[in-house]
Image (tube, rainbow, N blue to C red):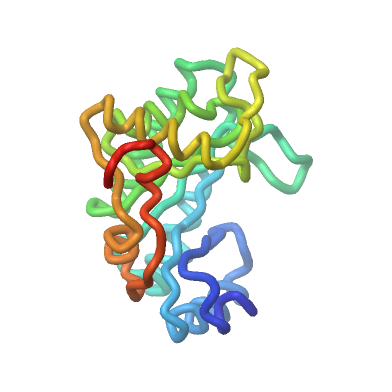
Length: 200
């Protein structure tokens, strides 16, 4: 919790599958320190956990922020991830997940990760659905689901995402706009749109 209480962190995840004792302990600390948080969804059963444990018990109010991270390889018997074997499965699963989230939380803010093998394909599809995205090395090393081309850098992925968003008629939030969107205090900083090589 050191990044939370020292003001380094602005946004973090809540794992619905974490123990209720842990969630009820950390949520007040994060709120006291001005943190924003997202509900992390790796598999659809976590949607039900989030509803029952976080929302129905009053730990989180609606609308909430949701973070969808599908397509990671299985990490053993303890952690399960949605099975995304091909592009049709990717599209179907993401649409189903968005529908289920909207049933639980109609005004939800939804962010989709460039994770695992779906990678850039998942990010593009999320943009087509009007959702927010996050890109970079944390959750994948591949650019595409059908090739082994590795990601070169986080900066390259940010540049790619900005250019792709603009090709789809969308625009990227500035850091200040994003902080306002997630409900944290404003800070100064660089505008990531500069990575795209175009004026902000």
